[in-house]
Amino acid sequence: MKAFKTLGLLALALALTPATWALPKIKILATGGTIAGTQASPADAGYKPGTISVADLISSVPQLRNVAELSGEQVANIASQNMSHEIWLKLATRCNAVLADDDVDGVVITHGTDTMEETAYFLSLVVKSDKPIVLVGSMRPATAMGADGPINLYNAVALAAHPAAKGRGPLVLINDTIHYAREVQKTHTTRTDTFQSPNRGIAGIMNTGRVFFYSANTTRHTTRSEFSLYGLTVANLPRVEIVYSYVNFNGDTIDALVAKGVRGLVLAGVGDGNTSDAALAALARAAKAGVAVVRCSRTGSGIVDRNIEVNDDQLGFIAGLELSAPKARILLMLGLTQTNDLKKLQQYFSEY
Ligand code: GLU
Image 1 (spheres, rainbow, N blue to C red):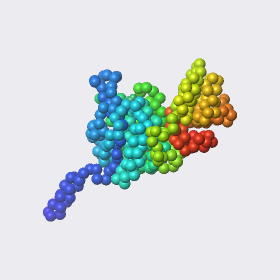
Image 2 (cartoon, rainbow, N blue to C red):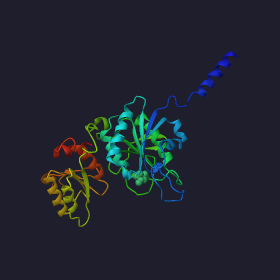
Image 3 (cartoon, rainbow, N blue to C red):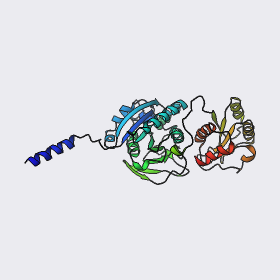
């Protein structure tokens, strides 16, 4: 009888023990976006991103409590078209600090989808941790019919809590799909399957919290990146701009940007990183004046290799290889904090 009583007390004690005692500890750093957006009515296509707080986001998905012990921090609450270098530096600094804490197993960053791929790539170059970092967004606001935010957030937390997510650099989780920061691109304005990894393919998939990786990330990132936040400020990040090529592009904007004092220019070229003879001549003038010129493609996929239709050796250009123009801008900015040497800059594009 006494033994039964003891067992009963033990069972009661276990039942009262918080369910989170052995769960991984995940920190959510919130920046805004549609995942934190609301509409006037569920049938309204118009809405305002970045209106829900991180605390409300967490409490809106009660199932998260079964996956991780969560804490949240509001780093910003913006639509991601307003993401800035200033917020990047703040976010990356918080990532480094939070991930250095033994009491944190991983980070989830909620983010607008418009520029999520750029933030993920920037973090992949300057955050120094092997712990999981997962960026997550949604295509439909929290109040929409068929909102995708709750399942995306659930999967993102499960992914950040999973040991297989370690050492891969920042991951983007959306629409049941895991992407590497370097590969991922938004490809459609509104559909929930907008994110693709067109060159090397997706990293893996998820099914309601279950994680399946398909491939390794073989490029340099985080702890193997030679870039860091050390000494970086908004003021000393080299100014790098993107110029977009199209029919009848005369290159006037290139000369204007050089006159403004840019340190680097990224061409979002037609096809294989090409542009008109007039624009090519303007880029050659820029390179001669000491501006670092990188050729990329506006097509959205493929490799812009050296010396195919354009003689990069002769003109002093860098080939953007697999990077999209917005990501090439980020790598060139960080690269120019280290060197002006064209060979070294080209090497960065092969490795990162
Ligand atoms: N333009 C907004 C943003 O990027 C909303 C788009 C979204 O989050 O899906 O934050």
